[in-house]
Length: 251
Image (tube, rainbow, N blue to C red; front, top):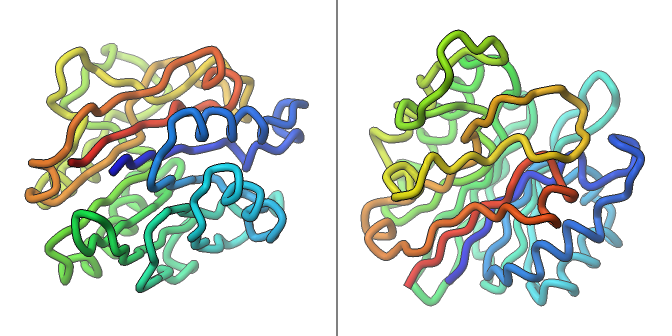
């Protein structure tokens, strides 16, 4: 079972950098061939034609969307999951609790029933991110077998950062809380750190310092079955989004 998480920068829309990147995003996703694809910044995926295009191209017949509240510019940074497995439960966290969105799905998979959380935490405030993840974990404590993934916008104490950099505060409250409950599947993988942001794509920010802010966490039983965690850094992923997609296989 291959799981992929990918922040696709404003839904691949051209207004961000003058280029419609949706085709590039689809190329990246179809080449990776995930069984479960979790998207963040799935802007405009509430339009049936956009979601249907992804589902058909990927061969993933089941999908679910959590609708985000509007930002000041009117954009809605939804999260969406596409999967080949039946969705037997779909819980959307209240939009007034999140700057963007989060969803919890129960999936019937070859490994049994798995609770999957796809989230996008607050872009700039660690205290608010901590509130958001606390809401998620309070709900998720009922599920023994789970995967929590997405764009956390938070760094980990497991990764080195240059002293004195000023692009972000190196706060680890969110990832510390996560590590108390679940296993960071990239945290101790050789060959790290496994930076996920930024790519070379023109984006709506000017960040330059490499960060790992995209994560896949799993409960201990699933973490024991995880293999091949990887960050996809290619010419295509540098074009498609300011984030690199991340993948983990489960056997």
